[in-house]
Image 1 (tube, rainbow, N blue to C red):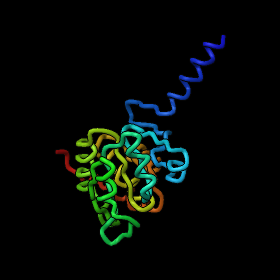
Image 2 (image 1 turned 135 degrees about the vertical axis):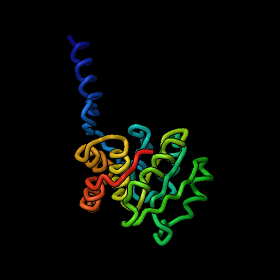
Image 3 (image 1 turned 90 degrees about the vertical axis):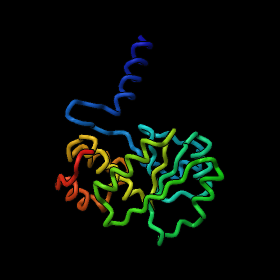
Length: 181
């Protein structure tokens, strides 16, 4: 009896992320709490990605220790990171990619570029901006390009930190202003 209960509980836990032919119902949270990452020394990607606001050096050390291979930074050059991020990331053995996205950069073209970087990564990716809002926005656009409907793309984006940019993302998602490669 105990084995059946254990199997049932395991099944329920693994069902937190469910897929259907209509798209994806995404319940797992991609956005990580950087304070918890530092405090616990642990982090695990969801589908190869963790989303975050601006990490500090201690957080980057945890990501490196846990096998992350790439950091994609969506912050623009005018935003203060509080550290020399490219140097810190490379010294920790991870690849640093700058893809500066301002509010006017929420486009399918930039989502295609992001997809290219995600595909090129040889392991887990930390994708960050200042708060994870732009991360969620760009991942919503990315998922629309991958075939998700608007609602599921938004749900995915919210799980990665999409908040105040949601209305702007909805406009872009509903525009269908993208071309398949």
